[in-house]
Length: 196
Image (cartoon, rainbow, N blue to C red):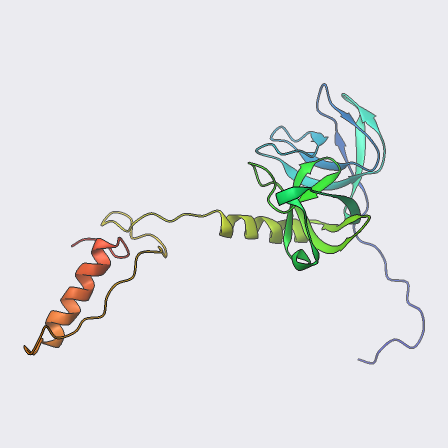
């Protein structure tokens, strides 16, 4: 295939989607919008169980419909430990409120999207299903603590204290079998492999 030699009408495939607004909610056009566990639209915020959908295309009140579009939008940057910098470009960012993205996302770490740029005017955030999936995967990876292996649950990778090398004790030659058993015992003690 050859490169383009004239303009092309590349069709946008993500039209706005519509959601009913949660009771007692108010959304303003331009706000970052999320879906709650009941499938209703709410202003994005640091609250559990929310999935960011995009930017509100219209203002809406309780029970009304809000039109939401995915895309790249400029939101306010978090302050202090939540402030995003150029070093965060390409990384996940998180919801602080319906117009602010941050580095950590408060206590619930609700992914807002992927940082595309950071300027003096704010943070350009890619808000789309693909970006949110990637951001959620980053959140999941960084917030996972694995338990020790047991005979019932062999588990996943667990970080543990260093296990010392197996070496001969003094001038006495130690067999490979003895060294291997010592290593296995150390790994069991660290919880990396299950006890016998």
